[in-house]
Image (cartoon, rainbow, N blue to C red; front, top):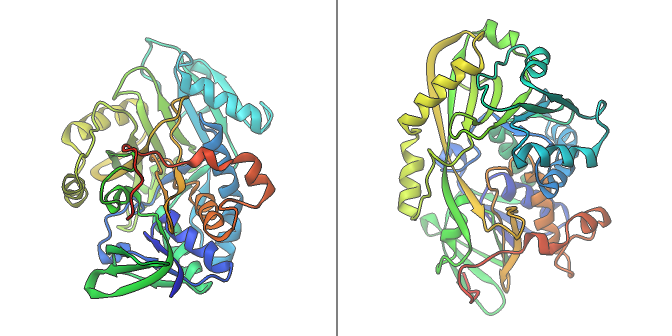
Length: 413
């Protein structure tokens, strides 16, 4: 009998299992790995990490996670991140840039911990690789030079699972098919007729989480996420080695809704500059499990998005030598219900007796997954059902992460 079964071996689930087993609990981490065909959101080499966020809660989650990166690297003996700074660029009339600047003002001093550049000319002078082709509006940039860069979610998920196993977690690479409630525990039926019994279950299966709750009352929207990889020459990659990760936000969707990472070497040996689409016009909701599975299995971004990305790559980076080889990445974001201020936070909450959720990354959770997993482990292991650390208690009252439901009744798994 396990104390806790963690369903989902991605970034949040593996972090949660790592921390639970470090507390001496008997833990099972359930879910296929990438090599076994998992259709998860982790399988890429480049995601942005930074503190500069329009939402202070996400900034705090990132800050506390980033502070653990070096310890995770040292414990694993393997690196998964590269610090090269973060630059938010956008129209100053938009809420995004104003909110990012407000957040950074709470974390540091302008001119030391972050820098503000006003106007197209100032931005292009300080970041000469970049060109801002639109003259219809003003531009403003917020640069965070430290505690920001890109990480490999593929590497981090693997590392966290290894550390969880090292702490005593049993890693069982099979998917959950059905959960059967007993009087005081759960019987989990896995692929291949295997069974696991656990006193508590936490659902950390990313975009699959909503379909693990049979009446689908958990208020999570699943939506396409797409990115385009442009191969660059090794020489171009070297010339852009100091390029920060970027988020561009202007009034034009899709032309000005992108996150961009500097060239990263992928497993195929090629160097790719990644442009991820961050708007709504070319993405759509995936209303059913079958629709979501078909999207992930196809592994192809929409042709119209690739066309726009090619145009914008040429306009934003006119001095970069692209080889012409283009690849795409598809994913799904699990978007939670917005609060009264329009902010979406992860769900870290109990759904019913003995069943909890740690999901709802909203496309932003890779950088913050370690602390989200830690908060879930605290909820599951403490009698107060929440974090005992005074810093986290002050920053993150549990009401911030309450699960939202479409139906009025909370149902069993």
